[in-house]
Image (tube, rainbow, N blue to C red; front, side, top):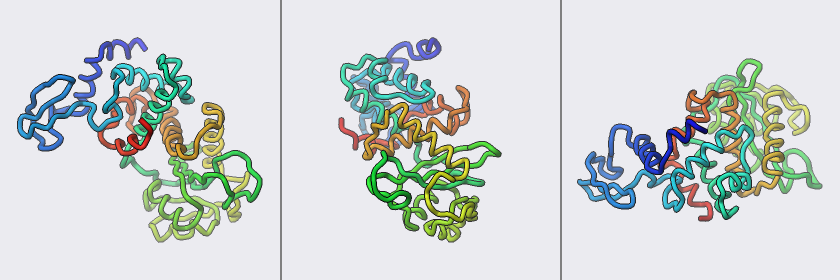
Length: 298
């Protein structure tokens, strides 16, 4: 905390930090690429070539915010330093927000930024399985259960340990859904270990080495260790931190946050971008998730 306060002692230090991250080689106009600008009021930069006005926060989760950047930075620091995660109520108490809704919106904006587009896919040997997220309900169990959300889980083998993971919501367990989702999570040429569910049988056509670990294709207790452990930890996290009060429409944001935290669970303060929690703070959200962020209620 002391190191954070020294580095970001003022609002201007936060602005300067974003400027260096956005334009490490000096200002570049996002429209024409020109290097010279005029500084204007309200933190705007006006390109001397095309007259475009921009700012260090344009196209980021900070765009149009009425709160100080330092408060945003404090929120990011607090969230990344909580091992198990943060609830909106907890963030509201720590930062002193008058509104729970503000805290909730901020958390979702930050969750949008936790997963960078174009991130590396898993490789090597990967266990893949599905699980249902949702409370106990009467009716059919396993694939085809009603009133729940199906989540595809991919866990990369790292010796006897779990390496990185990927989580993705899918519409159903059909071949079309699985053959679309797996290539987004796992690089072709990898060994993909699954059960004998028919939806996985087409993975060979996509360049995967398909290893059927278990002939029983029903969803139940006897899942293989890596995917099973990830599923159990995910459900425990949703119940523990968020008390199970996760709306289905916002589940993707929670899956992104859990993936972010799990893949950085053993990281030190300064590590590889995929594994370091501080790296998320050092790569702030430029231009890539604005559409998803605007979908949230402002």
